[in-house]
Length: 235
Image 1 (cartoon, helix red, strand yellow):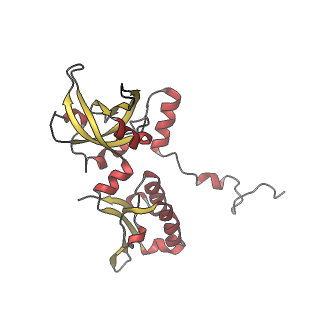
Image 2 (image 1 turned 90 degrees about the vertical axis):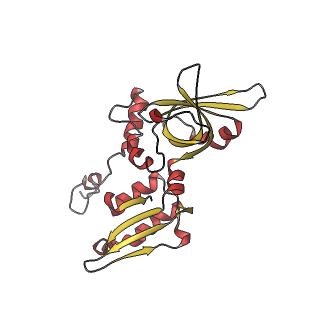
Image 3 (image 1 turned 135 degrees about the vertical axis):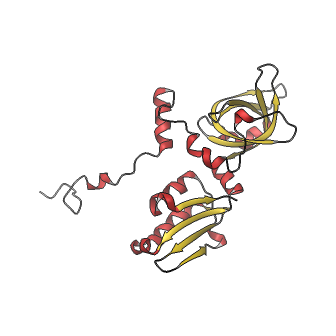
């Protein structure tokens, strides 16, 4: 019978072949949840090259200073406690593979950012770095916290998509529209470097098409137009 929902070529498994492989981030999270450790890499690896465009120092290079410094890392531990005055403070440990640092957030910084302070999130923090006589290590008092999407928005010039005329045959513009739409906000400008065999041009999308450049959006865009064609542009 024809009851087995076969693909057009008669192969019932043809749909499965198009399922995407797990993104690295998901795979690592699976390892951590099952085994309690990362096996095939460290979640910070995926961001390191990009993050160095706006966070110059690795944790191992930090020196005590009065002026605020910016640090990026994976949250590997976090705990909070009530102070005597009844406010909450939090301690997080950040790891960027070069080293770890314990960072303290006092009540306001903690409340504004508590959903970003989950273990296994990569975050960018700013604050004052000092020497902790008790542990002999560096410690940090955090004044602001960003997730990677917000940091990209703040520090990059925008999101560039390289599209060749050949790609437009299969309704790509409609798919692009529906991919960008859920991420629209006051965020990063988007432009298309459009090329055909005999010309190329830069098309700026309007103000209303600015987006929040989260991992989910970048992953979907790479799937749509190709890994090499999606780029956050930094100065």
